[in-house]
Amino acid sequence: MSTVARRASAPLALAAFVAAAAAMPSVLGPARLLSMSLALIFAVAALSVVVITGWTGQTSLAQVTFMGVGAFTLARLMAPRVGLPLYLAAPAAILAAAVLSVVIGLPALRLRGIYLAVVTLGFAQVLQDAAFNNSTITESQNGLVVARPVLGPLDLSGEHTLYYLLLGVLVGCCLLVAAMRRSSLGRRMISLRTTEVGASVRGVDLVSTKLAAFSISAALAGLAGVLYALEIQSVGPAPFNPLQSIFLLGLVVIAGQRSIAAALVAGILYGWMPPELTRHFTDSTFGPNATNLVAGVGLLLVLISREQLRGMALRLPRGRWPWPRRITVAPEVHRNVPA
Amino acid sequence: MIPVAASVSTYATDAVLGLIQGAVYGLLAMGVVAIYRTTRTLNLAQGGMATLGAFSYIALREHNVPTLLAVVIVIALGAAIGLGIGQLIGWPLRRASTTVKLVSSLGVLLVVQSLVAIIFGNVPRSAPALVSPDSLSLLGITVPRDGLVVLGIAALTAFALNRLFTSTRLGLHMRAVAADPEVAALQGVNVRLVTVGSWTLGVAIALGGGILLGPVIRTVAPFLLTLIALQALGATLVGRIDSLAGAMVGGLILGELVTYAQEFFPTTQGNGDIAVFLFILAVLLLQRRGGLVMERA
Image 1 (cartoon, rainbow over the protein chains, first blue to last red):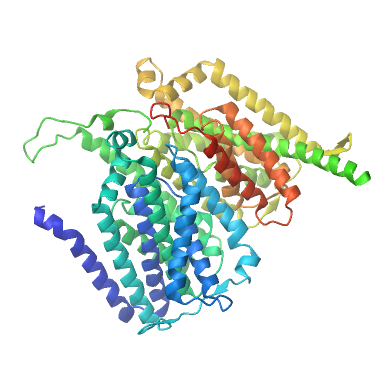
Image 2 (spheres, rainbow over the protein chains, first blue to last red):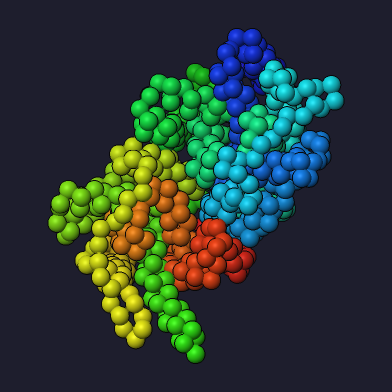
């Protein structure tokens, strides 16, 4: 691929996605349009996974929980008792998710290793049991009601207006995250993922970089929660249970994990797969569980086949076809050490 | 005076119950450590596997299979699953990054969780008694007879595991692979056997731990899996996921913490989970940040 084609391919792909997504309201019925709206929302959440896992190499198992934090905070702040308008409540909700992420992330991220996974699993569990399922916080069994407001010229109560707002926010997030990837922070994140020792030797501050990535990622997830609350108009505990974060992470890894396109694909899978599978398998126990089964098996197949392909690629001569060059392999790839 | 005496015996009973609960957490945590030491895979599916063990044991007992035979079948099932995971996932991914290995265990968790829900349904079940349903009373402390059996089995298993790692040939090979797979292979250690063996051992412990979990918490629900996984993973942090003894100590502490949290804050929702989460945060905060050379994981 020539350089021009390579540089243009990502914006072109995003433009194609936006064009296709913009055409959806006139093509789909209301049920499938809801799936598509959820796909856009979960694409924002999947972007947050790309930032923290795909680029920074840290595993967070609480991204959907941060969505829940955003959604519940928004719902509480917009309820009549507080009555904040959306343009104040939404930033507050996003900030709440980011602040929480720093509080729980700091103990784990100052150590090297996989401790973030354990901490975030605990956080997801605690928030589910102590907050989302707590009737003094959720107020009613069916969850908190969120009324769609009028935002300047936009009346969000219209299905189509809200859909285009979701699409606009998603595109904005994609551009923002892409800019971040090209910035100094983005380079520090990638170098940290490749080798923490090497990054540290080159002067990258591991703790602050990890914390920045984690809080940006939590803020994105919180934003996804805000959008979710506006779309569904009621916030209950079920959509934010700990298994959902694992499911989302699995989908992002299946989709490729390191690109913005992967987030879009993962979002579409998250929005479409469960309702379509439930529609297909009407059996009440198999239907809802089929999505996790498919995601789990798919995840394992992708991980194993990717590893096998990498092994094959290492044995292939690396040169411009058909002239093989001497094989030079980065030593870190060959070493069989725990990373 | 009487209420004080009553509360003292309540707290003493809690201590014993916490010990029993903690022994099971510790056992599950030892399974996590057994897998992590040699394969560098943090098995997040440990709780899901324990749930699978608990449910299969209950199902077998409901079909009037004798206790001992049911236990053997469940542990054999665990060993078979572990063997399969080791061969199909653990070995092909041996050179993958820690993150990829962690995510692969999430894939296993998704599969195990959905299979448990599909096969056994989404309803909680009550676990049958292991030996007998009655309780023992001693010095004002009332303890279920099953609990003591659980404590005994857990202690024996922990002892056996420790012996396995310290004074058998397989244990020596496991420690060699944990230290450096490449060098171990050069010394003639069969790394594949050790990798698959660790998975077999760890998953068999998980399913066996699930059997012991039943009598301790009475009702077993499918959503238990993340709950118990958290206890098992939190317990391993005491020994930086590398020490079997640390895992058991962490499990015992967690058992006490959860029991007392439920005693002192009965109305707080999620009291046990909050205790576990705070414990995890505290353990991580207390760990020294250390230099780059000191920390391996």
